[in-house]
Image 1 (tube, rainbow, N blue to C red):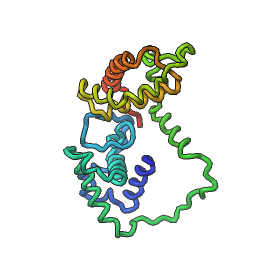
Image 2: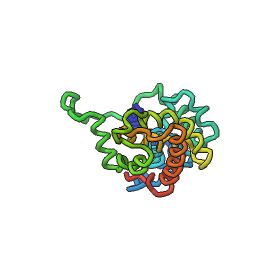
Image 3: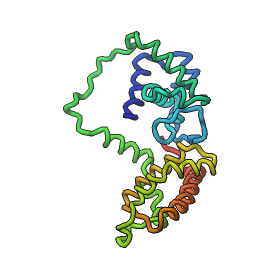
Image 4: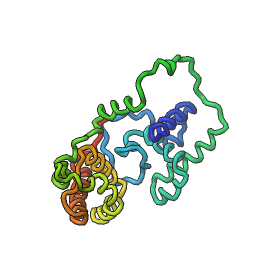
Length: 239
């Protein structure tokens, strides 16, 4: 649904030729700007909304527009969520813009024929998995070494709690604590947490020590991985 909302933003942008509006270019930047081969997102920036992974709104003005549309249409409380953020001005402009085009007819007509649905064999899941592999966004073994130091899939630990369940249980608490220690946004830390939780589940890892000790060890691991994620260039995304 996130991807569909994002793509709907592009469709509306194209259908009403919104990118030709001067104010639209002033708010989001010029659409004619070339897409970079790489973009270096700034996780600290509050000038962009947070919707798809990898701070995708920062990759190009058109993606910024589509991401802002997706947040505007899916989060009724966007004024509260983005209060105090420069990105709020983009959402407020989007609100005015969508009200303006609501009663208008689309500017684009086409006679181009597209493949009928019965001929399409590829699923959206397969399409976007291929794109993510191509863009280098899938790193299934990213945390393996450190996770295996803390948890284990040895049969001797089979009666213990699954590591994925444990991470989900302490997620909110450790996210808040690491944010307090490091000064990073909780959203950023949650990206690391989500990746670690998924990988722990895939590896079928389980606790090897008492929960309290595991929580302290996991806090250290999460803090280190969060800083590595931001400062080692791993958040640099290929387009």
